[in-house]
Amino acid sequence: MSSALVHNLIRPELLALHAYHVSDSSGMIKLDAMENPYHLPQFLKDEIAAIVADSEINRYPNPDPFELKEKIRQIEAVPEGCDVLLGNGSDELIQLLALALNRPGATLLSVEPSFVMYRMIATFVGMRYVGVPLGENFSLDIDAMLEAIRRERPALVFLAYPNNPTGNLFSANHIRQIIAASPGLVVIDEAYYAFASDSFMKYIADYPNLLVMRTFSKLGMAGLRLGFLAGSTDWLDELEKLRLPYNVGVLPQRVVEVLLENHGILLQQAGQIRKDRAVLYKQLSAIAEVYPSEANFLLFRMENAASVFNSLKARGMLIKNLSGAHAMLENCLRVTVGTPLECQKFIEALQESIV
Ligand SMILES: *Cc1c(COP(=O)(O)O)cnc(C)c1O
Image (tube, rainbow, N blue to C red; front, side, top):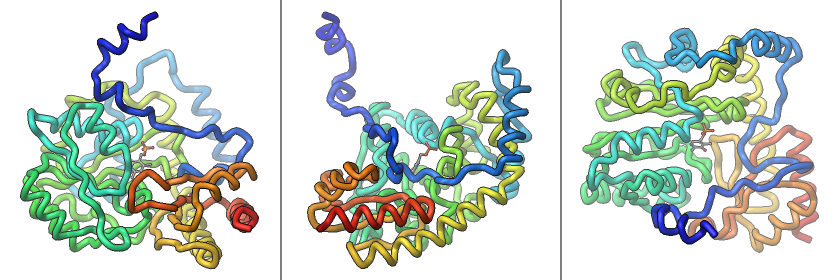
């Protein structure tokens, strides 16, 4: 057996980890992963099919797709003088940042509960991790944050804005205090920017230690894997050295470009999701304690959440059970805002699950 050999050679912190769990969703209504539920119009599907057919998949991708990056800079209103760095999803960019800043003894700091990949990736790259508990209603505990920054002097701070899995936007004023107090780099993770009322993109030229990270995953391109970091070229030029040269394939590059040319369609879908979020919030409020959300999902708390989750699953409805993920998430569930029909079916299944 090779098992003893594997256990002798693999790093112990990796042996101790559990792999990121992705539930089997075949045949289910899938409201667990913050995906956009809408399809593209036929004309756009046809255009994509033609582009795919014409792509030189026998060649390596363009390592520096200038036109795609230019389009991203325009559409995402990246400030003048700042640039973007492309990642194979923003998960890859979190890893790249941790690798780049992990000098001996360096610390990655974030809040909890938040996006689990910050902690996981710190472990992957052997970086020290500190998670500061959130305060009341999942707001930033600014005193605890400033104290932790003084104490730990983190090389890298991640804040998700809006936060996942809680859905709220932190106080922008508190985030500015954190950026000003941080001796290291602060990355604002705006994975849900398309559903939110605020952004830090407009400030990236104002702070030497601020980068904004976004992804197109939640906007309808989760399968294409494209995220980007926006910030000053001082940072990006160094990070660029660590980026694997062909991290974004030929097909994602070309398909994303076409989708960004038709950006209005995606924004319209995001607008629909925001409206449906308000409807779902109201319906869910009659059944559970629901938290305000500026993202495309809702976090809610109810008695016996684990058994409700299982009962929903038995009814073909997959959401996310967060009970047990963190002490503050006791009895919490998270549902992605789907189509109006999916949301309706979810509410019905939920009602059946609690009787
Ligand atoms: C979904 C998510 C990501 C990862 O997005 P990908 O680009 O698909 O890797 C990053 N940060 C947060 C907060 C997320 O919720």
